Image (cartoon, rainbow, N blue to C red; front, side, top):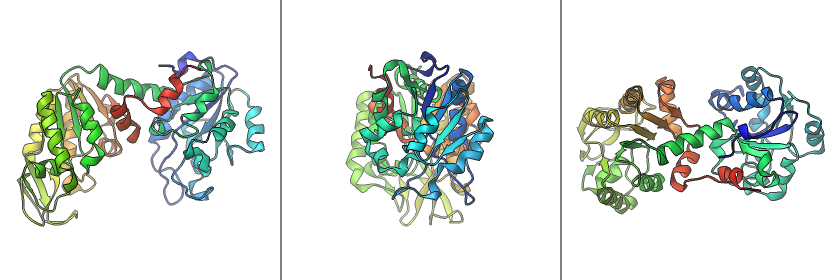
Length: 399
């Protein structure tokens, strides 16, 4: 793996693709600094090594070009405070003025370019756009794991214009790749994968891949009811992908063939409406009455899943057990998070990945008590499914 530590940085302009796609509040202030904080080690390393910084990122999904709502100028005050450094904001990416500013950078200077997605060429992976962006730096560093699964101009195509000695993965990207590789290729057994969320269709490939590596796979969240329905259970008004029942049965049979223990919830907390204040009751997951829906796993499932987790040596968690955003249906997700922490304290390696899992571990203020919390949702899933990512391949390609 070609990392930033292999690069000579002193007196060089370092063009860094960061992931500053952060939420903004109504006043256009950064509402969650997680992604900015995750980039700080790489940025500080470059400055400490005597380089200058040109930062580029996307923000949101602007549809028709420049839009003040999605301008990266909004994050400048937050970035300056966290980096403890003055930031010069450039209002575009490829104008003559932008190139004049970055051409004359001195060590210690920090430039932030405007939103890459103000240019349609970015998401198209336009080669000419990537070539123009490359003019901003002597060295290219990709530290945006959250977008590394996209073959966009700034994440994959741009690397063609830097030879091997002048491109690398940043510290965040390196840590992400190492953590996933540890789970996929060097996991101490037993490996337990906890897969939750709404839809089986979103997780088919990851479950298939994990069948080759995991000893235990725990299924929770709305997707569990597709498995339960496929096995003949009554799931009431619970979320169920009826067009995926055959797929669920195939995965159940694959687990048997592979000798993988597939764990489904035996009981559920059900409600008569998708509402925090709905009427609730505990029932068998296979006997949910008509018009009622499962919104969390029940106490028997919590105990059974927690025991599996606490006997594991490696743990991957992707997806909640229920509608944890509502306090009435968060217990299952919280219990799983606490079980992962307990297993980690006992020596297990735990990787938390996927937006909702990260949101949950942060909600319960447990992120510092697990081994690694990934910054990428879709990127993490694709890495597990494919074994690599376009943004990583672009750096590792010898040129």
